[in-house]
Length: 102
Image (tube, rainbow, N blue to C red; front, side, top):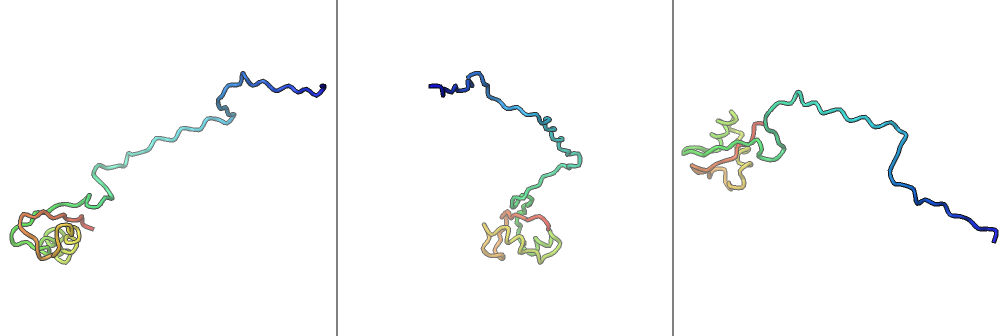
């Protein structure tokens, strides 16, 4: 009877966001002025060269030619395990991946 309550009318309320905070500053543009051209990647073989085997080659001879040290032959062997089972069995015409110098 005397305890009637009226409900608020929100029918004219519109959505949206407002804030009294100042607008955020735009980020400074990236500075690439010191970037030099070239290719770089962390992907395996990205910097690898190739070498085509010629008659008389062996991995030690190729390593001496490429790295200046014949004892680095195992780096070439490891990089080519997909096609080499034995480091003493390379054949003329075969293309080997040569990992970049460390």
